[in-house]
Amino acid sequence: MLPMNLPDFNRRAWPADGILDTWHTPDGWPLRRFRMGDGARGRMLVVGGRGDMIEKYLEPVMHWAAEGWQVATFDWRGQGGSGRLTADPLLGHGPDFGLLVDDLAAIYHDWCSGEGPNILLAHSMGGHLALRAMAEGRVKPDAAVLTAPMLGLRSAPIPESVAPWVARAIGMAGLSGRPAWKDNPYSPFRKARLTHDAERYADDLWWREQTPEVALGAPSWGWIGEAYRSTRALEKSRAIEAMRIPTLILATSADRLVSPAAITRVAARLPDVRLHVYGEEAAHEILREADAVRLDAFGRIDAFLDERAPAK
Image (cartoon, rainbow, N blue to C red; front, side):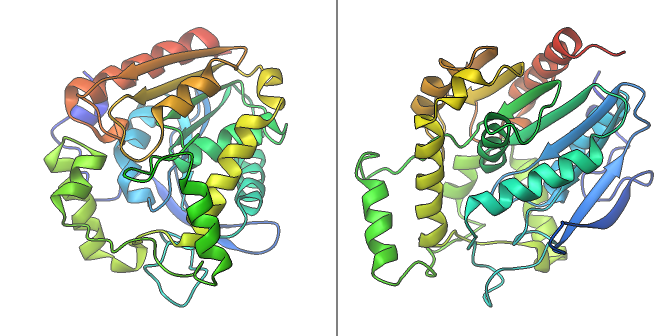
């Protein structure tokens, strides 16, 4: 039985043996960070997606810490508890993704500088930035795990071939700082896009209500435009074929936020990759899904790490 199934684990409380602190980037930006685990198995950096906060990943962090990993996770610049980039605290606006890659490379090298194996595990936007950092040679973990990585965006009802041009036109019209849609965290449609697990979705809402300062709303049109630019550039890059870090990708064909087709295209070009695609049983947040999916995903990740990044 996995540690996160133990009845005394409270997903709405900080684990007593963890450390919540602040880590500063080379340019001085404060990133909120959480750490736990003794590191007998190695070191792991867990990276969330756009709009995420550390609280959503306490359960996975607890699992890998119990497995012997020394785990760290953090809030991206501009979201969660790591400050904001606009006057509107709910607007998911962001900089050139290159700055976020810089942040990721810096915190990875600080955290994963000791005895390995060193693992990078990243979700959604974090998955895109992690793959970009690896392809650019900025980070070289012993193995990587990407869950529902943002290697392309779903844009329905706008065709995916047209959507980048729409975002660019809106930006050129001076509206890049406007929210791309009106966000409602209590909407059943938002829940359906993220997870089938009602209790874990309720955990997210609880943390938002208890600590509203960590909550983030819809992305800006500027963020949408930058996401299209960065994902398209990465897919066109020849560096993908040269990226030989053992990588496990978990995706879902039912994803309504990121493009399953783009994930499949990019995965086919990686030299050392294992891809598993869930069906309708999984929404975007695979590690926060109902048990049938969530426990299967943890099992696949643990088996992959035992095989490709064994303990030293």
